[in-house]
Image (tube, rainbow, N blue to C red):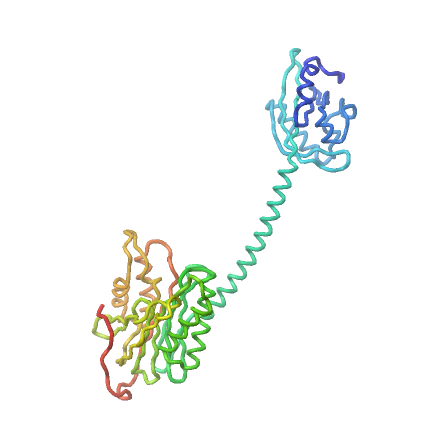
Length: 400
């Protein structure tokens, strides 16, 4: 064609000028025969500067292979749509969606009608979203690093296996998330061995922060050999005053052994019962006398501790409800009774193997992953009975 507009185009030109999209039309030689006013504004050129030229005349050489590929695809398929850009005479690039369709005029000649939709706002939004995602990813990585460090710190506070005189202690700690609200403490001193498990309500970062704060306060009390009853009252007041208005509360079970090995002082606060194992006898439960701490000023019982004599070979099991509040495939909860049975079956094993069998027994019962943090402390007490005067009765024990 000689670049002269065909008659049919003159008839629809008025309609094309009312569109809010840029439109150009090329003939079967890919030469431009028409551009509407919006298109001229998009590229900063007038129609006279564009008619008779091909689209490739306006794009840099490195982009023409892609452009020619899209033009060929449109000619083959009779239509095409892709995302590209329009070069402006001022040097800018205008992001657009290009839509093309091949039509045939009454004389059988083919023309390509190409529209250009400005997607500048969409691209700005995408860029903003991309930058926001990059910032979020960077913040996420920072949080991940912080959580890894927090997990290492919390793991460093996890109770350790120890040998204290004739007392052997095995421990296990597993948060359900990276960090958790459970903790255990095995605190030896010159005269006593303190065994504690504590469970702060909730999961994750906030519970872990509260747990670490309680841990620090508890460790300070232990280092000062504060009596257990006074320690419970102090911890309850501490949380009520320091974390006033929070939704956090906590439970604990604590045992204090004398160095001579024949005496145990126990206290619990809203916690599942500890278990005392004595050869040839059923498991015995040591129940909490106080309620959960951190909610009421009167949470600690007037006489919160239980003192009892031990026999050489006794084992003591302290744990959190991550070992009891688990469900099987039939939605039956293991509970304290179920855990007691698992503990009883493992009681004759060496203490380390006993710990592993308890954990495996709970895992075999449980359907799915751990629902809660897990803390477990097992102590095996040996001593020379001749060095301990008298053997008293166990107090406030419930037969399992």
